[in-house]
Image (tube, rainbow, N blue to C red):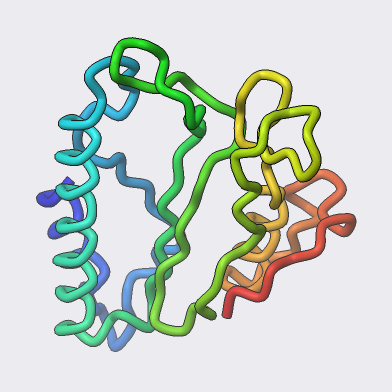
Length: 171
C-alpha cells in the first residue's frame, strides 16, 4: 500500500502544459488480510496501524506537494463485524459497516449514529435479530454526496433512486 500511495502522489503531481493529469478516481487496497475470524486482535491491530500510517504519510506527501486540495479519500469496508466474539477470539461478518471521508475541506462529524448494543427485541435495540449492529446511515447517500459534492456529477445517472437519499454535507 505504501509504495502504491507514493506512486500515486507522484502521478498526481505530474504537470504537463500547466495542467495536472485529469485523474478523477483511484482505488487502492489496504495492506494486510482483513477477513479474519479467529485470533483477530493482533492482525487487526497490525493492519489498522499500517493502514493509518500509510494514509498519514500519503496525506503529508500530498500536502508537501501542494496537492491536498485535489484529493478526497474514502476509506471503507464492504462488510461490518458483529460486536460479539465468536468463540475463537474473533468476530464474524456483520451488516453495518464503517467509512471515513478524509480531505482538506471535509466537514467534520459523524454520519448516522452509534446504534448501541441493546439486544434485538428490547427498547432502543441497536442489534438486529442476527446480532448485527443496526445500520443508521445508508451508504448510497454517502456515495450520492461524493458524486455530487466532490466529483460534481449528477448522482441520478449512476445510483438508482439517488434523489430519494438525503445526502450528508461532506464539503
